[in-house]
Length: 378
Image (cartoon, rainbow, N blue to C red; front, side, top):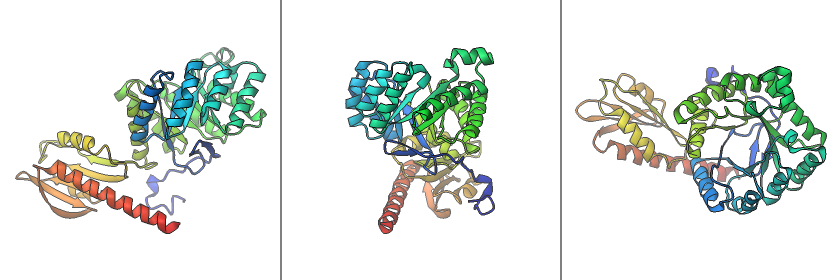
């Protein structure tokens, strides 16, 4: 759809045209939704702990989960883990080609690998053959912190040219073996370097791109850095699957990933809460209310919007464009809006539980309507 025909042209993002690959049951690239990934941090050899963490990530909305396979004990456990996982698993492989073959045999949907790190051409060929035999795709993962020595000598330091050259060299190895089911990432901890590398790579090859600002840092600062770096690329239409790299609970990576996509209108999951920062005009404690609502609505996966505004200056205007709204008023009460229209007054006491009930009812309505549409389409 062109900007001229889009209902709000200033919000239209023209996604880069990439070819599509499959990661298990998840399509990546082309017109597929941008998928959200995270990575387990439990010892993979502890299958029970790893499965438990994957389950938490699945409940948070993860489309794909990556699991490190550094040793034979890990690839042995991977067999059990892959059987229990409801989402496709990416096996993270470094250096040892046998781990890649074992992971493919154990049920990996994708191998994260650098062909140049695997060793001899025969070993690379064996891993590619295992991927072909077991229906695995691959991700070429280039990282500014582990570029090849010859490229660092050539360019003097990690830079976009060096990262893209590394990625294209690795892609050529796969292509020379008639393997095309791959995606590429070119990550750095510096968002400037990351964005520049992805922009250059997006022009050079048509494969799907996995976005990330690697080693972004702790929850707050890492979220900001990731939102700046990935947000600017997604806004420009670059990116087919993402991972937010945080020194935090992996579940937080999924939450932040969806929040970035929701902010750009690229994916919608759960309740998008629009809330004012609060001021002396507030008719109720906005910050406390929003914090509690966020907790109590975490189980809702149905996309919808909720505005929670402290007073009538902006409250009614925001409520016009949200599914459910609450605007603070005087005398310990405010106004509930449903589908942009005034519905009824609501006392501040009991307001949180009432809003939760309304959201749950709306979610049920939307889910039923979608189910009916799908049934009618069949």
